[in-house]
Length: 68
Image 1: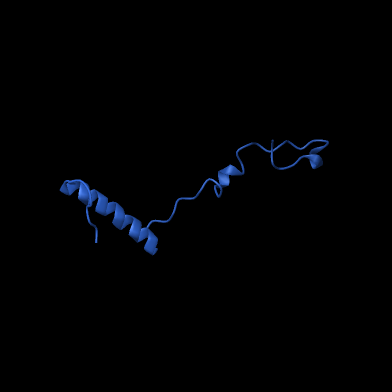
Image 2 (image 1 turned 135 degrees about the vertical axis):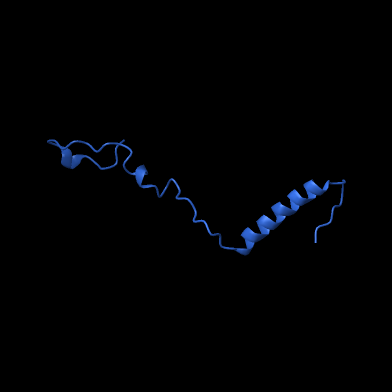
């Protein structure tokens, strides 16, 4: 139960506050969503291949894959 302690909210303000509380409660309850989570920058394959690889040469064995 939600009780307004101070002020006089409009019905729209009260509905907005209730929507936020219900959304937070659904997340806390672990309700699965239908949409998958977007991939993070850490798991993006483009993160690995942002820079060109060094060209092979006489000392290419000493170079590392990670540029920089």
